[in-house]
Length: 252
Length: 252
DNA sequence: ACAGTACATGCAGAAACGTGCAAGAACAGG
DNA sequence: CCTGTTCTTGCACGTTTCTGCATGTACTGT
Image (cartoon, rainbow over all chains, first blue to last red; front, side, top):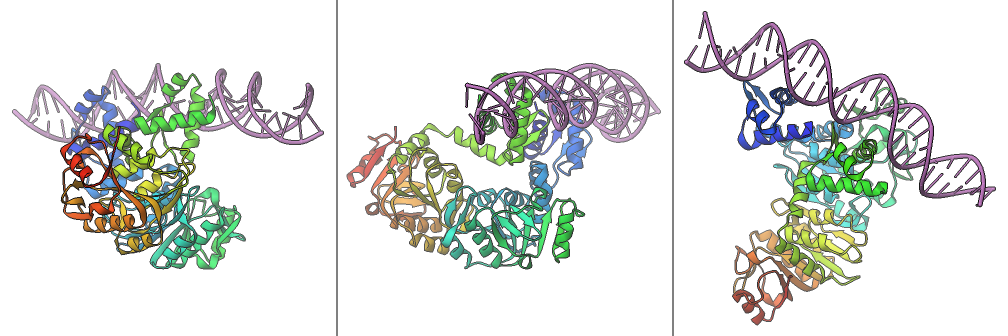
């Protein structure tokens, strides 16, 4: 039995039965009470349960959903996505790009945040199906399989009919001179079309993207409001971007 | 054993069993734990799994539940889906509805079948992303979460711009007098719009749907070419449908 | 107040981990 | 066909993490 499994098991018990008794679980799983207690302590530290004498109780349901999702997100991108999710205002409209980082953002949207999400990614849409409050709008078009998003003329046309407060774009390259770049021309055009429909555009860029460039330009810096990244704020490239007047949101 | 094989094996285990224990896999495959760990590390870097102490877990528990649900799909739907998939001709264009049965059809499409699939379901689209030959076109619109498909004016409008050889629709009720019915008016309208764009419309109906009716009429029998079902061909209701001139394709 | 239980902490053995290294396979170029 | 390069794989090593036990403390119910 994996340690992470135990944690899931405990969270499951909390959700299903509304409580956990350390002694019983230890007996059920055939492990020591100490391990159960340690797990519960950790979960409580992350806000996933409320520790009580003898076991643990769930915290408020909305918070659980959110925090539990956080706990299963891969650590690397986790901080970028929650920082990006925090940009979304209650009641606002968000255009969300495709790609793994954007998907992580979708999963990081708090369960108690009511907002409208517009996306051209069936994957992102699927991930948000069980979000209790998010309104979903899907942009159709021909699907580009390698990136799993709708692109092309139809998709760009569909994008013309929407508008939003915020657009979160993933890119493959973030470079001071080359600007924001990606590997496919159609994708680049689609990202441009999405960005044009939002008041503000922020770029999602995990640290390995910083300082690299791909074949096709997506946007010049002037069209971008900011950058969400987990890169070191004192990184040379990041400093250059700040000098360009870009808002850099550190993710930690 | 090829490295790519190992990766597939690991992903398969994750999907089927919901976890991977490095030690066990190493013993099973007769390779070192180091290789397993390296693979898991790589997969985690690509966001395909979550690395934990002792092994790995799927990225999202929801995905597992989903994959597990598929794998234990009742035999009934399985046979309906392959019978329906057989209706698709090489090079043809298929409009595929949303819902679990349609999803099963998507997964039953032979890997060597080149065709175009048009769908308003992000879930179906996601499922076909890894089909090597299928061309995918997504119909956008407001997402109705309970059924996980795009519906409404925008979606209907998007449907006007496409046409296809075959339309496969799932419904919740199949009744000789009431016709084909479903539980939601918007969904019913969307299904009508899809059906209107295809030369032939076939209905996907696992046996429990036969003889029942829901609130909203989707189509009259005249607009339907046939029915794919795993119900007994000599069932009274099925015989009635045949008498109406319907082609009934048995699934076995 | 007292007994019984739950708890935190420290500790030690075991297991898992990351890294560097070397042997071998696969491959490209001559 | 040979050679140099790159990639993969397994092993060894030191490090980190986990787990159960022991100990002393805190809490609960009678």
